Length: 123
Image (cartoon, rainbow, N blue to C red; front, side, top):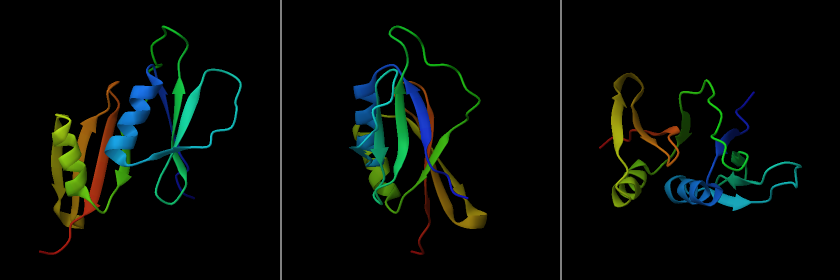
């Protein structure tokens, strides 16, 4: 079993879509025409729609869910950090020595907590 996708409620669809595209290098793509509010599907580099953005009703706040963070893996953690720095997005870096992992935690424009991690490469 593998993770298929994460659905994120948003109030500003275009801003949140652009954020995920800029920071995580996801690409917008096909989304079936569902009944209900508009949304977008964002695809990873292998062509899988991993982030589904769903708008809430006009003027409504996104519902609170029991979700701590959404995590992504990259081969270019320094590139992610450069983009975060260029957009003045605050982040925290953690090193998990036991498994040679670097984690970068930050928040999207609507407060969702994100993690991007990478396996450390020998120097």
